[in-house]
Image (cartoon, rainbow, N blue to C red):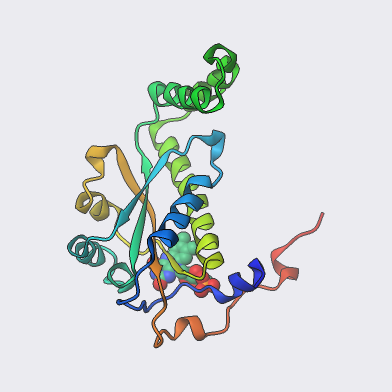
Length: 209
Ligand SMILES: Cc1cc2nc3c(=O)[nH]c(=O)nc-3n(C[C@H](O)[C@H](O)[C@H](O)COP(=O)(O)O)c2cc1C
């Protein structure tokens, strides 16, 4: 199957098979896809909480409009933006670039100034909003990789972020919830994935200039 055929197959499943679990290899492929997603300046200013604990997921479901996907999928991914993107964060990122590319740090001064300048030109609120956007890009890559390996991924923003932050203890970790994805395998009785995919025609979606 081509990627387009796999994207036709994928669906934001509502009913997951509670008994079917991702293999370690499948889970690791999804983590790799998130890790490889592009982000602005390469900063990856988010973390992803991989929630498998049943009790925690029950609490999260209550904070997620009781959506069954939260408890019934094999894994719940909670994308969370960092809330403190300060100079130290920027400098540590440059340290990472220097070490992974084996570059002398002095040769990264221009890059460092760009990173630090970008961070200092935004308010904390703007930086969190910016990080949420980066998290959504990673969500998109996760959804595509899930389709690629024949796994169902249901992206979701129907939840109370403040309650998620509290249940997962994110505030004290310098994080706040961006978006979530329930990942596993569709149940035979899931009706949603059997429905025709509704998409706007290309003639409406694209403007060619
Ligand atoms: C960011 C985002 C948030 C979503 N939130 C929810 C949600 O909370 N609950 C839900 O059932 N579906 C949710 N969806 C699924 C969409 O409704 C679904 O992707 C859309 O209707 C297209 O269907 P398809 O993904 O099956 O092709 C969300 C999708 C995205 C991308």
